[in-house]
Structures are given as structure tokens and as C-alpha cells.
Length: 293
Image (cartoon, rainbow, N blue to C red; front, side):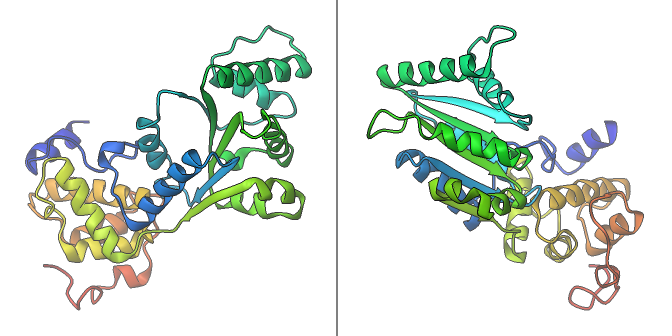
């Protein structure tokens, strides 16, 4: 889009700093993201049967996951499954596909399970271990989660042949905590829930992404960043949406700095459907009693 190219050049940026696509190079290591990453690393090191990472939509779960996958040791086989759905047998097929194991058309559930078990045993014999990562795992059914629990029963005596990492929205945590999932919950030995960013973290997050993209970090003023926190609730994806349009609006108005009034204009125009502007946010007395800087 020409406008996006012009605003990056206008602000002296090398690329757009607030795209919605998860990009580990822009990962801002807030205290919460550091802890979530540490839990993932612990789960891998301690060979826990199930590691659980949850958070609201846009909280940075997938970005952390991608950063985590960059540093995986070569003796670990990763199967990444996104948005897996379906009933009995279909989940096993998702796993086999993720591990690049060919499945003959019309294979029975028993045959596919046997094929997966043989693969896990072969990997273990070769000195490798298998980690299955389920992104957007809240889309799994209760039956699907129970089927995953059964996979953790496959072992060599003292060692686990397969580890599971479940990443998803808050409802995944609720599903795991439900009385029906008591046996599954007992297998979850490492877990973390990502909360929205606090005000200070949002201002640091915005500055960080601007600097990674070649800017000074001051293209969006601190009062504007505080208003962005107020409007977004500290959810990184919503912060990105507001910042993206704010830079575009500032470029269109030939302003070198995004101000509080710029953010209010973005909110008033409703260009970001995911963010609703409350009367408090739009109040001209908000943010240190000033409507503009």
C-alpha cells in the first residue's frame, strides 16, 4: 500500500514496525513474556508431559512460540499443529501430517495410532525425542484433549517418548481445569497465563518496535502511548493496530510526532474495529489535562 511505504520513509523507518504478523525479530521481552518463554524452556528441559501457555487473543503467544522454535536443539523432532479440529482419529492424522509421516488413504484409527507409536519408538531409539506443539489448542474438543492425554501414556519405562505443548486462549485453561479433565490437568506440570501489558510496558513496547524498525522510538509521544494503553487494554495486537493507523494519520497530517490528538482522531474514526473508544479515552481532559502536545 503506497501510504504505508510513504509513512515509513517519512518517519525514517526501514519497515513497518506494527504489522499484525507474528515476527520474533520484533519480540518485546516484557517480564510476562520472559516468564512464558522460561516456562516453555523449562518444560522442554524437564521433559514435562504437558506444558500449557494461555493468553488473550493478540497477547503474543504465537510470537513467543516462534522465538522458542528458533532455538530448538537438533536432537528434538518438532511437530507443529495449528487449529487442529475433528473427532477421534482425525487428531492422530493431524499429528502424523505434522511429523511428515505418510498415511495411506482409508487407514483405520488403530493403524494410524500404531504408525505414530512406531515413529515415537524409532525416534527414541535414534536418540531423538518428539515434541508436539498445538497452537490455538482451544479449538480442540474435550474428546481431542483426552486423546492427547492418552498419548502421554506412550513411554519407554522411565522416559517420555512424546511431550505436548498446548498454546491457546483462556478458554483452553478453563477446559483443562474442568472436572472432566482432571487426569489431563495432572499431566500439566508447567503452565503460564499471559496477562495484558501494563502502562509502562506498553510505552516501552512501542518504543522498542519503533527502534527495531530503524526509528528513534520517539515518533509516538509518551502521552500518546499512554492513551494507546488506555484504549487497547494493553493487548499487544490492539496496540499494534492503533499505532499503525496513528503513524498513517500523522503522515497524512504532515506531523513528525504522533500526539494524543492523533490517537483520538484514530479512535473517533473507528478505523480499528477491535478497539472501542470509551468517553473517558475521548475526553479532551484525559492525559495530564491536555488535548494536544
